[in-house]
Image (tube, rainbow, N blue to C red):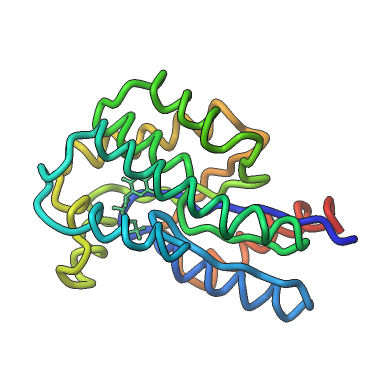
Length: 211
Ligand code: TMP
């Protein structure tokens, strides 16, 4: 039976993750693989309801600890109902954000305790972790300008200010340095075509390992 493969896409605002998830999904589907392209917060009906609470409204609507708990409520539902069943079927799961976003945004950016986040990872995720994580890195000013150019919807995190976004950018760099087996830090300041080619080069060995 074909083994499943779990790939997460991470990074700050405006890094172009969604475009690359779409392009990779098309390439993998063309090879005949079942692909489940999903996102966080969200990805299951219940988790999408929680997403609405998280990404809309004023920046101070939730504290970093409350955000962490809401992220994990949505993540647990997503994992139980979408990710685990897909991996058990042998699908390739592409998730636009996963657990590293909580470490970076609520932890490094917001100051939520690393021990709390680690405990939630242990108890809510079990053994479920991405096989490969592509962290798309971009200078904060470039990413925020791109994200704001998309319009005002779902802009709660964008509105948290440059200092917050600098901290979470460093948070992602620290994750990549701490887990080099799983994570690849990608310079996202390239054209979508260049990024697509680079990502394909990184994904092929991971795919070969489970085929
Ligand atoms: P998106 O803009 O990539 O769809 O993500 C929605 C927002 O949610 C984005 O600003 C990052 C934020 N987020 C967190 O703060 N923590 C998390 O764990 C996740 C998954 C997303």
